Image (cartoon, rainbow, N blue to C red; front, side, top):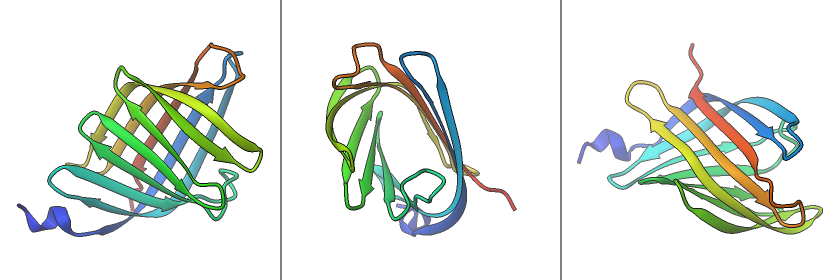
Length: 147
């Protein structure tokens, strides 16, 4: 195995997220932060700190890619895990300062490219318990920040 795949790299990244709710309203956010990136033979990992921009200051976010599945784990006072898999609904328990919710996710598009620069594109539907059955769309784009 290529030794470079196993080494942890420090990158500057931009994290763009867009959430379209059931009413069609869109909430967008961009975060610029330092991240650590590592890939082994079967998985890729990206970890970064959230900020006040995201409303989750003090939270670490870890994205893990495994085949056609991405996990988003948040480490904080209210840790959570979202599993996003292409074409499959997953039930997730999501802890927030406002309570614990059952959230369903369904992956619609997953691209994780790290050949030249790191670029991650996720599009998934999201249903929150008690919010009705109309899914929201969430788009997350992560790119290595240039120069």
